[in-house]
Length: 152
Image (cartoon, rainbow, N blue to C red; front, side, top):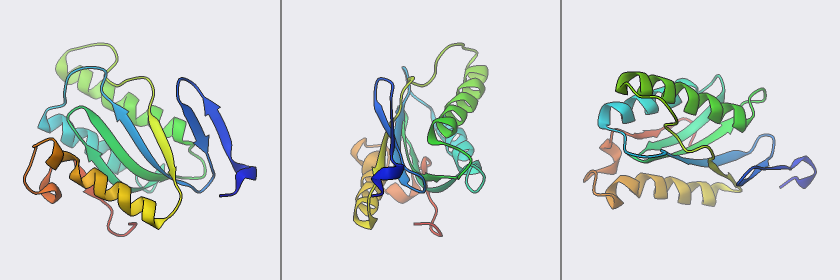
């Protein structure tokens, strides 16, 4: 890891930034759960940013949280990407639900993935999430799962 280019920012959680790094990102709903149509909308919105704002390797949208593995594009820092994903999806879902206020928790957890082994471990963890929550029998068919097979 090139520590000369490493930046560390802190809000409630530390956020390490390294140009060209691949991240595992997790963020949670403030309260409640997403229903299947909402899971699909959030996943579709995340996938729509691939190639423009980031390179998306995988996404798992669960009823109460989301996991992403992505590499930000040069012009879009992770903080800006997360603000966009959370902002657009919150506005849309609040409109559909007829509600106002925060949909997502303010912070998100991010981790720089250091190597291929760590990437594969996180992909397996993400894929197993809906099985552990008893949401499906086959994780490959869970509606919140996305794998970019060209990138992973």
